[in-house]
Image (tube, rainbow, N blue to C red; front, side, top):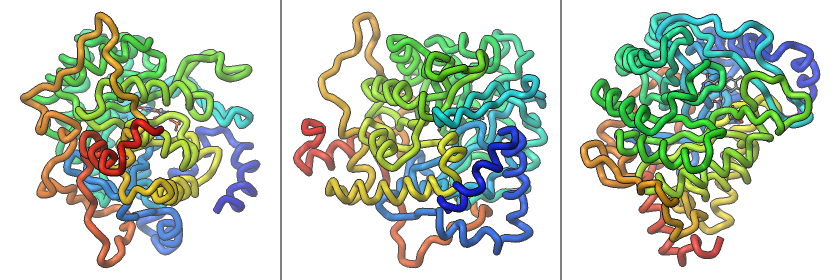
Length: 428
Ligand SMILES: Cc1cc2nc3c(=O)[nH]c(=O)nc-3n(C[C@H](O)[C@H](O)[C@H](O)COP(=O)(O)O)c2cc1C
């Protein structure tokens, strides 16, 4: 796969990235008609190792690597998830009304930096059309969420109505929601990222659904404000934090386009830093999802040890090809084994330093007793009876006799297991 991708890559790169992505959508859309053309890819790329199986928010994740927001804006790539090796995925960003997005061109590759810059602006078919498309594809075999955003022409004071409508429309179809307040491409969106707004938004959406609500943060927020936002989100009852979206730090690449957000390699260190900050406050309370520049098993493992229960990627697919997710998952199993772990949950958060107190003026995070099920990351852990029952994705073909996923507490329990092993938090 790697060699083949290296051969075709120069030809793909001759095409505008948006066009290349549209072709990819068309190719994967052929799955239901010609499944035999794709089954060998599922076998090759899809890793379902008991060491990586986790149950988070009552959903079963065969492996931790999911597709990031924007990969499947319109729900046309659900079939692509196991073919590319993803253990979970999402559709969107979806807005209530269809949107053209920004004028083209609006996405650029920077091969030298292994970076992409995009200024799409939530182009999507709107919730009605996407809902119909998802209904046709139900049930899914992997956890699939909705990445939700407000329409560009919705005034900020009405933003909550957009998110509420999206949750109402999609709650019977998807397994979780990823609330996008962090895209740099919708004017005014990032300004909504205040502690009060986030807390209120999540509390309002909680009234609409009991599906997990994840909040996706921008990497461009000053460190102290990240803590504020996470605090507000947890107090509002958020079920998970996703870090990070793309960055508008244009100093990271030479000759950037001065619009949109940068993803891939140049985002790596900032995304990691934000994960570290979030882990200080949210680890042990809600599961954390790391995204931004993940491009190898080593990087994936670094994120897990820094507190991420689950991971997402997008840009690495563009530069490393369709085998990258399988490569990361197989590499993760090896790295876990090398460190003497028998399950991913034992490694989650082992590198989080102890005893770091909240910054002055920043209140400590408290979990909402009404929404926190177990008062900790266990919030993400629900009963197996709520198990994801979706089953129409190309089946990743679970091997016979394979264990059901282990419950992942991704916080306390992970630490406990680590303590059993001599508490590597001190050693790393
Ligand atoms: C072309 C493109 C489109 C994107 N669209 C969205 C989107 O609609 N919603 C969203 O939450 N994030 C979107 N993102 C951000 C990604 O989900 C992810 O947070 C970011 O790219 C960092 O991950 P990566 O370095 O693995 O790509 C987009 C990224 C790219 C490259």
